[in-house]
Image (cartoon, rainbow over all chains, first blue to last red; front, side, top):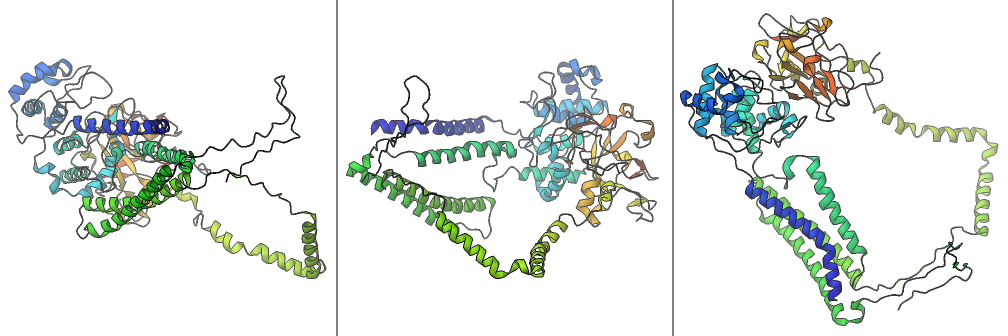
Length: 259
Length: 358
């Protein structure tokens, strides 16, 4: 009996091991994944300090006076919003040249980012950092935001903002961890591969609606497991491994002889 | 108890010892039956019985939990959490209740019911000559009694009725496949100029204004900044009949690029306006909305099969399964600076179809 018992345990061991590994990986990811940075309320920076920071950290690629070079574009007229977006999400300074400047832990704190933004804003007029009111999801309409998001954003960023692939290693990042300010700035300035949506295409109120819609996506999912909200890939893997796996397991059990 | 039997066939050729395959394999019969522990040991049998009872009990508890969950979880003013919990409890109760019955029944059969193999021979398929003979005779008698061969009018009437009866079913079925066979519609969109149109929607009553999708606001050329995109519909379309069908053909993507980058052919030189170009958003491959625009490369990407179109070069295909460039919408501005369509697309939008070139 004990020998048979052992043999039976070993048959289910791989399945249990797989389930255990999945739970473990998920748990570690949840524990380790970085949380969204909180935007500071301070909105004006010290342009003189910003210039110093710019010369030491950015001028190598963007050139003195931000006129641009072979490596990087000119920043004259990109505005404070663009700088604030790139610096507070850690996309700039860029770690390595490549198809995409990925988000990473920011190198400058909020006040330094504001100083840099203030300096670049003195070089030429450009989009400004939005106010707290402009990005307050409570004042936006998630329903209208959904209509706008579906038409303008969902094709790259996925129906709920989970992100998606572009060409040659580029991708539209997930918006699940982005702060409302950063989302607003991205719409306004069009960073990297993303086209811009100026205030004529999406008015400030409409941008706030989009933010309100995105914030709605972060709560509890009424449908249960969202599996990353990335559609057929993760759902298909789930069905094949968990669904078909358990059907095969049951079939094997039904067909096996009882001890 | 055991009814398995071994019947080695006597006519089977003995398997050769020279390594070649025999002409026929000997029937090996059934392997000797091994009894389960539960068959000989009453303690094990009792334990298996308890197992089955426990699984049935789990099923009972799950079913009760599902019903209790329905009454206990409040859904009068539900939060999303409540809805989720209610669905989960009812579903889990129903699922475990049924699964438990199934698992217990299988376990019952495996562990407690008689597990001896039994052999049952197949019956011959044929009914036997006498029965066949009788059936043929009945058919022949029926035929001659009906006198069908001597009454040609009756034969024709029966045949006609039988042939026509399915038509009442088939004609509507085929007719409903496409109530509308007017394929020339594919070649026209809501952008085509009209006579005497509403001046709110048509410039000079003729040319359709461009509007932002979905807000339906008219667009000034000066409002579009470099490397911005605008998803566009014909102005006023949401209030019109067959809105979705018309929108599906008329959606356009408006992009502004540096005019120096545009490679425009001579006949299309005046189709753009100061670097603003408008292309159909419907992929020429199978008609997905091509809307993933990479502003650094000016490439427009289709999400379905990765067809890539170069916006600066007449939306020609640079990658993927699409065969034709995206149709371009010729645009211009009125006195106030609002964009309008000077003409319809000069070719049908979307994927190919048989009559496309006619």
